[in-house]
Length: 461
Image (cartoon, rainbow, N blue to C red; front, side):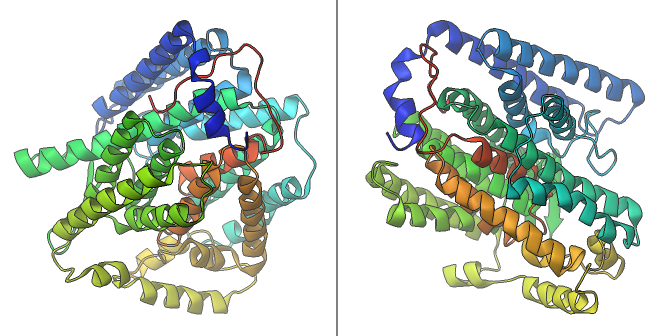
């Protein structure tokens, strides 16, 4: 068997009723955590912050204990599951406030705990990728120090550091996670995406049918509204939604998976951001052309692409009245090329160590913004040397993803990379770090890693 998803489908009958019940309870606790953060949105009093911290921590502990004592996960697997659960809250602090106010989401705390556990157990692997990942935090101190706005620089540094920590931790899990572990973890990730998609749909309905503005909505010219829910970046939320669609499509051709994928696809388009939709369509076309037949059923995929691609494009046209044709929608740069050109000019002024991690703040002070192209933004922030080190790490992860026993990971990774071509940063998108962790830690094609007698759950539910 060459792909993890086929093994899932073959062994679904082994998924015990008791384990399914425990997973549903874990999902229920996750939704309580989500609803808690929705309920305290915009409320900044000290009692609310303390209550959010205590209640959120208690729910995560309950989920952790259920996963480790009832679903047979070890510590690190359960922590990876918690990262998946907290992903839609990665732009909210542990106190329920925005990341800009307190840059301390659960995602950072859980990653830090996983790193300490890995170091304590002495399980950090010694390979070229690990050495690069260990050198980069030190190298990034130089562009941090030359930042004019040190606080903004620190926030950017945390984004880079969380990516590096995540990849180091994932390396310690290589050949330790089985397809069964992923069969438990991936539904939790998909569940988080479904929550985020539901939030976007809720925002759209409340504003357009009841004229009530909820959560974060960015108002732009041309009567355009960007529905970002609990996220800050317009490109980030749409690409995040797209990652789960690919995971669902690779986990069988059951009707439920396609219905969930269609729902998330519609939510992507409702954000009114092209990035996720165009990136996903490009990858789906690539899957139709190049994915192996033993990895995914091509006929349902073609129908899904044709139907949902058409619906998504129609929604984008409706949300952007200034588009005159499909070509116009695809090629219109909205000033992106000018931002990229300006960034490259600034890079030429400081090619070795860049202009500083606070480059976005520098541009904002000048009435402009950072380029919506992650590679160029990385280049102008950190300089050519650090950028080359990051590129080598990303390429190494791509090679690992191609050898993964779950064939869908290389396509999920690809949609993230393409989406980042239209976003300011790879590493400010916390889900990109988690996807890289999935790719690094996944068992390889040549390794069969099922635990004898352990149940394998159904996916997508």
